[in-house]
Image (cartoon, rainbow, N blue to C red; front, side, top):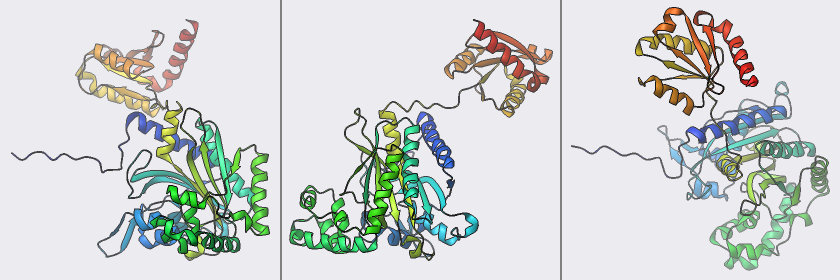
Length: 437
């Protein structure tokens, strides 16, 4: 006899169910609530797109392109890739659907959430299928938009209960400043070329700013004395950065300047930032969100010259931080009614009654396995149901059943044929009796 196949989830992925699933739903729902207050609407883009879309946006020296892309040839011999991040697809949709038109409002403000894919070594907080919640705003270079975007992510994380949030802030300058700084970094790093890691040697000529982002200890020692971008900022970039700082200070957003911070993708310019928590119960500062300004990306995809700014939050890390800080006690919607069936003969009547209560907006559960009445009451208590409504032949024939409040023990009759009309008053009476006790 052939052995049954045993299947397991792919390495670097996770199954979400019960309490974990409920927590994720709350995290996503709160993002929608907070972002809507700032005028952001949701956008949903394909999970796979042309490989070139991600390669052109991320930059050919980024780890995403050189090491981590999940790419494949489809049946039409097209080179496709699972999305490794959200911005490229949103920019493509912005251009393809002409969302830069005046009828869509400018700046155009949108958010996304969903799975991303990168082939990297699975470890704590890193998955091959991971999830992001992100925001993009197109069409304005105003420093106040930078401040709004940073404030929004801080307020969102704060609303989830995360403590001691801090913004790490830097600027990469405009195109002119970045070009001058790029050459200065090359000049500084050239004498150390043979001592750099293999990745940094590759990046030295193509994008030396990425060397600053290296995690290799020797690379980190070498860049300690490297020049900083602040020596090369144009007057306009300096003024923009100062205005962002002033705006954050006006809103009492805690921030620090980190002149070595370089975002992992190549399309950023001017303001870049990371948001981290420094809660003492966690080991060191943990980055939860990161983003910044970009220019040239919309044009790269065939649209008009349009500035953008955005951020992304790693949901797995966010959930882990919420759990570490004791902010993860999110539960499924509580059961309002549990319908106890005395015997199988009332199964159809129980379904009719459950459907009527659900149509009224109540959460209702009932037994489908033929448990005894005693076992059904245990199930109701296990689910923390507020009320029990017992249904048997007697109740069906009389057209009346008792609603029992499991918290107070009080009971009130209700006419089954008029349940929609009577139930609000019955629950109000039970609540009054509970208060009186």
